[in-house]
Length: 256
Image 1 (tube, rainbow, N blue to C red):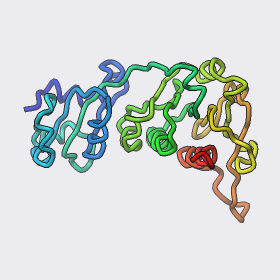
Image 2 (cartoon, one colour):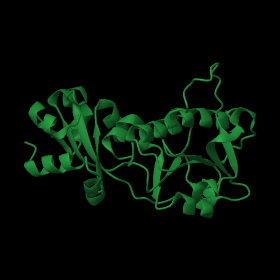
Image 3 (cartoon, rainbow, N blue to C red):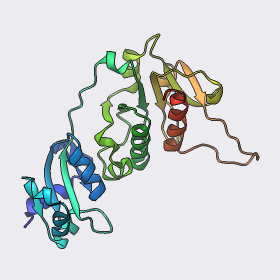
């Protein structure tokens, strides 16, 4: 049986204060758990229906595996449809990579991305384009929120998340003449006509308010994705996850 204390712990991890307190987060579903098992994240608990264990015979050797009934899994899960497996893993330490290493790559700096689904999508897109590090300021949602975890489709196990108190303070310490910053603004330079480097910091702003004044002041080049709509009446802006994909695609053009 899954104990009441463990059940309560798992349920409490839906709240950020408990994730921060215990340094744990929840991963649900077969695909996501398989991604977790391939990663170097430390697993605390793995709950599975007997059917999942039978289909994954190697799992019988996992010391942290505990079989659960459908009733128990229902009390542990947030899914509307019951998952066959669910895991609890440790949130990794927030150790920032060496500056010299960061300054030789493309890095995303997220400013106040508040929707967990958008945040997870950005991680998924970043993973596709080979981004290894995403810096999130204090106003961003938590990537360990269940919705963000699911939206990332496993990218959180490959793309390092660094949370900082101030994105502006982080950027002022890292930017240089050879490691410049690029911010997304409606009045920016047409990204399709702008020469883009293979390293630097790409700033993506809040869904409603864009990039903060502090970060704008530290932006070396303002860029925009122009609209190709044939009417004056069209969408005012792009979803931040979609915009991130387009921007990264342009930065990566011709590099492979």
